[in-house]
Each structure stands twice: as structure tokens, then as C-alpha cells.
Length: 268
Length: 267
Image (cartoon, rainbow over all chains, first blue to last red; front, side, top):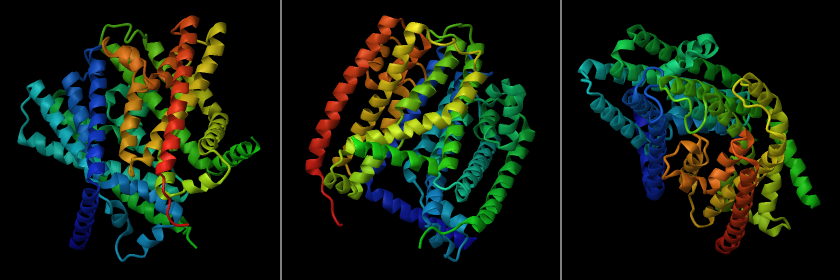
């Protein structure tokens, strides 16, 4: 365990050094991420200029949900996104050989090698947005709620990681998966809205599937509900979310090892 | 002309090689429509307004459906980034010494990609449109057919030129990935992909709707949906042509100036 922590911290150190050697690119990346958040805020403002609530979420509750989404996706994009996108490419080009030859868990090496610190401000901005909406709502947030929020954000990141890792691993079967980034885009574009909006569709089947089978809807919704929607928050879902995150993580590891049997190196 | 026909055929074959990838990508592209239907249904239900951004709920869903068609014409995934890659990596020299115009070459490549895309995506599109038929306003009126087809074709050329112009920035900046991200985000909002531009505040709408981005998605969609009369439709097509002329000049000029700066090493 300690050995892996040392490897991960070395990876992070190297990534930071590399990013700081391209300072302007780093700054432009941060600015572009902020632009994305700003555009989303404009969209929310435009929506709430035309309606009072979206499936029971008012303007500031929804801002908190959006903030939570940015916290989770910010952490995910910092640590995992680039790595998982690269995984498809490594499988296609045969570069995976070099990872498999190393005396450490390939999943750890593949998942943590490049940390993209330029995505981290996104998470901080998300946190700021959460703070702003709690202030606007006038809610008091205790230590227990904060702890629950942190736990659920963590399990949300793990859930997304597991799902994305499985998706990238499937490149072993579908060569040239240009769609890994798309998958992430569509995953987040469905998860950043209140889960309740999906309930009326196809008799709730879709909502059920995205909440319990591939639980992307609870990733941001659950921590946000826990803090700003005490009334409609169901504690048993917390247990479910944490267990589901663990199961998905385990599944991703099993799938990866199984998929390696089909991996044929492309290099000669 | 024959060499470009050859490029077209090779690109066609290349697309068919990665079929599984293509189907996954096509399938994924439809998923946001579900979110759109769910979200706007909740938004319309949460207030008392029948019209939001001058659109009814049905029209709002139709708007996003037709946006997908317009994007299928206008979007050029990887074009600007690919050009950046060719410039940075020195791949461009291959084209400079060959009797092929790099830009015309890519235009044919993209036409082939689109041709394959429309053939292979026709069925999923038909299925989704059939599923959403209750929201749709029906087929365009007889005098709207020609403008509808024309505006979508022009959206293709506009999308190509906008992305090409962005890609040419690589001649001046080594690393353009982040610029491209900013461009992508701006395009997503300014073209009317995220929400209809009729929802913008009055002071902002005239500014945004005159940009070429709006002529790539928003205006063509309004024509197809029949939200503007025939005269307005032809006016929009006229402006599209003007933007295409302006951007062609920008691309030609940028290409000429860029090549002077270009250096390639190694062999």
C-alpha cells in the first residue's frame, strides 16, 4: 500500500512539474474550464428566468447541485480523465505492453500516471458555488452534513472512475475508441440535472436504471440532496451509493484482467 | 478532380473499417435528447409559461432534434486539432510537396465522412424522430424544402471553414489544445446548441445571432422548423453565403501567411 502511495505521489509530482513547464497552456486551460462553468451558470439563470422550479429544485438548490457536479467532475478530471482517455489509445497502439511489463498493478499505473492539475480549479469553483448557494438558501450546514457530503463526493468519484475505466477497457474489443471523451461528455451531461426529471420517462425505467444499475444519477444528486434538500433525502440511498461504488470498482478491476486476455499487442 | 475523388473513396473505406466505434459514437450522440426531453418537460411544468424563448414545449424538443441534424452537417470533430497536429508534427510537408491542396483535400475527406455518416445514421435518426413524432411540427411546407436543404448544406461549409480557420492558428501557436477547448465551449453556446438563442436577453440576442456560429446551427434549425417565413429564410441563406465568402478569404489568407512561417525538421 505504502509503495503505491509513493508511486502515486511521484506521478503527481512529475505531472505538476510538466504542467508548470507549459505555464501559458496551464493558465489557458484554467480559463477555459472557468468559461465552461460560466456558460453553465448563464444557462441555469436563463432556465430559472422562465420557471420557478425544476422537478422540485429551486434556483439555489439547483446551483448547489451544479456546484457538487463541478466538485466531482473536477476531481475526476484532475486525477483520472486524461489517464482513462489514454488507455484506449495505449490499447490501440500497443503501448500497453510497457505498462504490463512493470512490476506493479497495471490498473494503478494506468489510472494515476498523469495528474492534470489544470482541472483542479474546477473543483474549487464548484465548492465556491456550493458555499454561495448555501448562503443564499440560508441553511445551516453542520459537521455531520459536511462529512456526509465528503463521503458521497468520494463515492461518486469512485463510481465514475469505475464506469469510465470499464468503458476504456472495452477498447480491447472495439479498436480505435474515439468515443471515450464523448462517453464522459454524455455521462456528465445527463448527471448534472436533478434525477427526478427522468422519473416520468418510460415509466421510470430509465430513472431506475441510471440510479441503481449504472448509478450515474446519484453521483451528484445524492450529496446535493443530503445538504440542501433534507426533506426529500433518503438515508438508505447513502448506504446503497457507497456499496455500489465499491462493487463497480471491483467489477472494473475484474473486467480489466479479463479483457487483457484479448489484448493483442500492436507493436512488432 | 480525379485525385480528390480518390481521396473521397479512401476516406469512405477508412470509415467502414471502424464500424463498432462508429455505432457506439452514433448511439451516444442520441442520449442527450433524452435529457433534453426530461429537462424541458420539468422546466415547462415548473412555471406557468406556455412559451419559453418563443417556443412551445413541443417546439423546444423539436428544436433540439433538428439541432442534431444541423450539427451532423456542421460539426467537424478533430479537424482543427488534426491540422494543429499536422503543423506541429511536421506532417504538413507531405502535402506541401504533393500536387494536392491541403484544404481541398480535407474538404473531400470531410464530405466522405459525412456521406458515410448519413448513410449509417439514417436508421437511428429515423427511429429517434419517429419516437419523438408527437413533438415534431410535421414536414416543412413545400416552399421551405429548398431553403431547408440549402441552409443545411451551407452549414456544412460554414462548419468546415470555421474549424479550418481555428486550426490554422497552429502556425502561430505551438500548443492550441486549450484554445480549441475555449473555441468548442463558445461554439456550443453561441451556435444555439445548448439552448435556442431566442432565450437570450434582448440586449445580447442581436450580437450573438449575427455571428457565424449562429448561422451554423441556430438559423438553419429555425428555417427547417418553419419558424421564419420564406423571405427570411432566403435572407438567412444570403448571410450564410456572405460568411462563407468571408471565412474562405480568411482561411486562404491564413494558409498563405502560415506557410511562410512553417518549418519542418527531420525526414
